[in-house]
Image (cartoon, rainbow, N blue to C red; front, side):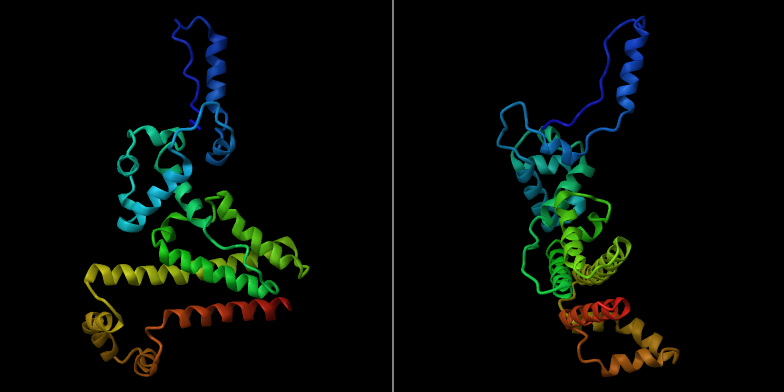
Amino acid sequence: MPAQQAPTGDNNTGDNVGDNNAGADDRDKPQPSLWERLDRPSPAPRTTLTPHRIAEAAVALADAEGLDAVTMRRLATALGVAPMAAYRYVSGKDELIDLMVDFVYGQLPLDTPAAGWREAMHSLAVHLRAMSLAHPWITRAATPFSLGPNQLAVPERAFAALAERGLDADTTMAIFRTVAIYVHGSSATEVALQDLRRARGWSDGDETRAGLAPRMTYLMGTGRYPAYQRYMEQATRKDDPDWHFTTGLDCVLDGIAVHFGI
């Protein structure tokens, strides 16, 4: 559906002061959100261009070339439509990114059965991480304030799983945010490592360590980091991100369970 535009007023000479003030009042009113506009039935027959097609094409472009490659012109080319066609649904790139984020969140399997709050939170965390690794740009694009319908379905699922524990609303949100922040931080670190390797042409952990060796050799040689030195010499899971993620997640969930007695 077309984005709502502020009234432009009549081309008069300025005599109709009341009408001019009414137009200013209309412009000051909050405009309907992207999701409200898309939920409204279209008065005209829908074309082959839909919000789903727009989001799908934009996500494919971002997955292949990064978020910065997504422009309204590039999107139009990918869809085979006129450059202005997508503006029927989104007002610009900010709303396009909102649509992309919500499209990706809509692919999460939130209906997976879970036996209790911990299994539900663990499942959510694992799926959110997988989403971030499959669409690395989303660690930049998605925020807790994007407020799309599919994105809001994630805390909805978490809150429902925690409801059986008799927690108050603030505690429920604190638990969800703790898990979500852990997932975001862990995933963003993995994405940053992938970006670094891609930029430097390093294919694996051995090449990464070799590339960083001059810097690390100097720093370890100062003798100021003996604990980190022991880690470097003794660690056997440096290249096992799945183990690091699940171990950290278990620590978070264990801490929640003990702290709140749930």
